Image (cartoon, rainbow, N blue to C red; front, side):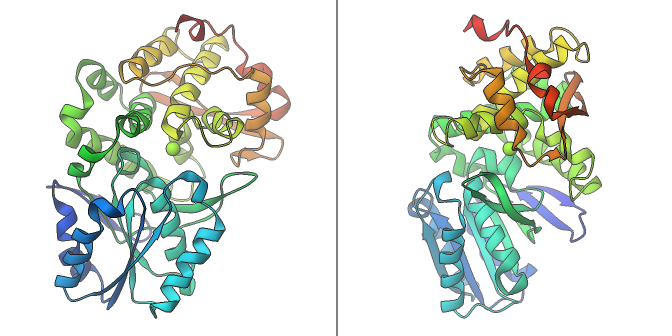
Length: 357
Ligand code: MG
């Protein structure tokens, strides 16, 4: 088993081990004085794992209920949160009881936000079951929901008391979900770790998945520990996300997954960086080639004008400017503030790579 300690304001551990899902009872017992546990999951994941998680918790002496919501990013809104509160209150959950988030990123974000706000905050444990959640969204304490105006516009920073990562759950994931997670995996190589980028190039990530998860989680842990509330370095984790979110928004959050949109966003911003002379030439081409190796898209049909306008509504805007994450080179990233009025011009390039598909 690999253990990664996160020393945020409220420290906790991330455990990576095959089969750890069935040990949730003993971990919850060790970490909490709860009597009751509410497992929050969705209609895709619950049929696969809920009974095993429920049995493990029951055997450790907890009273267990479950809240299952319909799978999909479309459910990530305040109405679903109200439904979760209803389940928690009906089950007489008190402040010492806990929520277990069993599922992908959407589930973790919503279960975490319910935990952050119900009774002004109760504990929760993450059991991420998708690659994207295991390498990225389950770590760092960001929770929340979407509004019609954009993604993740309501939420809270709320750290879990533990994250249990079971790589065996990836074996039931459809290939598209693996591809989706690889977008974030490649991001970590781009922003912090050239050797890891090379590793992904020379190997099949899925053959070394425990090592891949450990590397991504360690990078995120390091960044989040230094900047829990995203005032500085944590912004680097948004590499590819400003334009990625714009693509998701323009496609109304369906048609392209988050990780795939991030892949396109990474390519576009690397091309922009090269065109502006701040990114080493050839960087975008390396990202394109690695994204293609993992079946990720590298281009979009949306115009630079549409992308700039959609990105202007992103929550990373600060007044009249936007913080873009750029690369000096693979493995080395920085942020640059660009006036919103100049954004379209900044990201507009000849788009040499998108024509090569
Ligand atoms: Mg992301």
